[in-house]
Image (cartoon, rainbow, N blue to C red; front, side):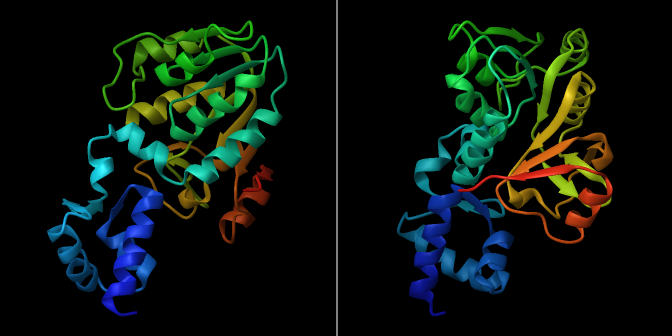
Length: 254
């Protein structure tokens, strides 16, 4: 691939992802890190992209908050997963949601539901579902984090631990065949664990980019969850691990 088509491909990937690391670009383009850096240099010189530490972004995305950037990444996949997850929840049921881009899309997919009881630590989820269709929304207290508008810590965990819900649904930072569901932040992992303890049905919603990834902190083994909702079927060894753990996998069509 000569530089010009590669430049077009880089810009197309950034339109999809918003921000992408140099190493990920190298993997997606099947070239070396040095080749990617050489390709990015003229794009940055003419203002088509902005270089950051270890990554590049479109200028239109640099001003966004981190959570907004993550919302734009793999959006079609997350929306498909959210629609399927919403179909598994009935009017009048109770659901607990943690903070994550996919659970935020799930909140939007639930706007057609009525009389839901929703428990969450996410101001985005609470804002989306409160005061509509006869819903009751309970939000965990504490200091809201500036990057995602969510409450964490002992106070938030104590609050959600008072509820028992029909559906406990969490997002995932990574899913590994051996270590299970993982995250990159200790506080987020602790809160997700608390959510799963309160549900009769325990579900992970995520997109397939999280497969075969290893986060920093384990949330739970695969056997702890009942269902995984994703837009692509898992492949080995994760598929085998999910089957061994008796996790139902629901695949959403894009």
